[in-house]
Length: 243
Length: 243
DNA sequence: GAAATAGTGTCTATTAGACACTATCTA
DNA sequence: TAGATAGTGTCTAATAGACACTATTTC
Image (tube, rainbow over all chains, first blue to last red; front, side, top):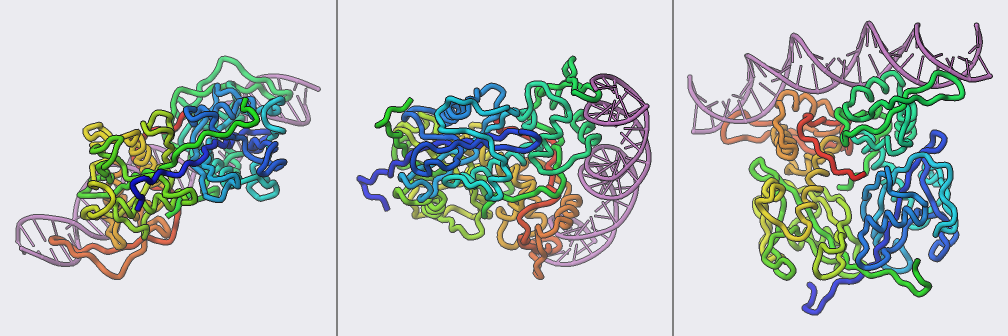
C-alpha cells in the first residue's frame, strides 16, 4: 500500500519502428547499426527516445522514421504495435518502448547521411530464424509486427501500402505471397480482388515490361476495410494471444 | 539534434484495464469511482501507476486487477491493447498508460473493500454512446478494447473466457451475440462450434434450468486458434487502423 | 514465331445461411 | 399437458479452389 508521500517511479520512453518493405519478392525490415552503447555496433530497429516531455509518441515515431530511414509519412501506413517494457530489457534503466509498424513501398536503398551509423534492409526471415541477431527484445518486436501485418492483410487494404502509387495485380499478389509466405492462384486472386468494392481502382495507363503483354495499372481505392476478407490459406496461421 | 549532454525526458507509467464481462446478456465494463484528483468522483477504468521501477508492466496490470476488482488471474484472459500517451491526457504531467484487455466470466458484483472508492459494472453501450462519461481518454480505450474483443472472438477461443468453467452452447452463443451485437441462428451456431476441433469438449454432466430440458455442459478445449474462423455477419464491422 | 507476361471463364466441392421439428424437463 | 428450453437435419445459394486457354507484347 503506497504511503501518503509516495510518488510513482519515472521511466524513459522510447519508440521503435518495424519498417517492412518488399525487395525482390522478399519481405525486408529496416535495421540500423547502433552507434552508441548499449549494443554499439549491433543491428537494431530504428528508434530512439522522446525528444522532450511534450512530444507526441506517434510524432516521435514519424520523426525517427524520417531521421533514421529518410522516409516521409506520405502514403505510409503507421500503426502502434504495443508497449515493450520488461524490467531488464535495457541496461540503462527502466526504458519502455512503444513499437510501431510501418509499411513502405519497395525502395532501392535507405537514405544515406542520416542519424544512424548505418541503415540497411534485412530479410525478415533471417531475423526470425536467428541467422541475424538484433539488439534488445527487437526480435520479438519484429515477430509481433510480422504477425500484425499478416493479420491485417486479410481485412484491410494494407497490401497497397507495400506498392508504389500505381501497381499491377501481379504486384499486389506478390505482396500477399511474400507476407503470408504462400503461393496464390493468379486467376482466383484477380477475381477476388476485382470483386472487392473500393479496394483497387483502374488507372487509364499500363505498365510495359521488357517482355510480355503490358499490365493494367491500378491505384489504392477509397475503402478502408475489405469485405469479405481475403482469407489466407489455412497453412500460415500463428497465435499471439496470452491467457 | 540532441547535444552531447542531452538526456531523455522521464515520464510516468500507468496501466489501465478494460475488464469486460457479460451480465444479463449485455456486455459490461468495470469502472471505478476515482477517489483522488484529477477527475475525483468521476468514473474511470481501474488502473494505476507502476509500484516501483522494477515492476513488470503486465504484473502491475494483474496487481490492479486484484486490488481494484478483486479478480484473480486464474482462467482470465489478459492481453495488451497498447500505449496511450498523448501529451495532454493527464493534467499531472506526462503520463503514458499501457492499457490491457481482460475478460472475466459473469460475476455477481465486484468485490467490496478494495482500493477504489467504488467499483461497478457499467454497460459498454452506455460508455460508447456517451450516456456515461469516463475520465481521461478512457472512452477511446474502451472502444479499442471492444474492437479487439470483437476481432479476436472470430479466430480465438476467447468466448470461453466470458463463461464459467462449465458452460452450455447457449451460454457461448450469447457471448457472441452480446459482443458482436448481432443475433445468431442457434442451429447453425451449434453446428459450426461442434465442427471446430478443440474448441469445446463435452463434460459428462448437464445443467438443469428452472424450466425446460437440461443442457449439455462443455468446457474450453485445448486449441488456441479457431480454424476456420467463426465469421461474424457482415453488419458489425469497424475499422481501427490509421494510414 | 517463340518466349514471356497479362488476363479471363468454368466446373465442382464445400460452406453458409435459411428454415421446423422432436426431445426432455418443470409446474 | 402446457410451457419452456435443448438439440438436431435438410435444402439451397454462394463461395472457394482447381484448372487451361487466349491476348499482347518484345526479340
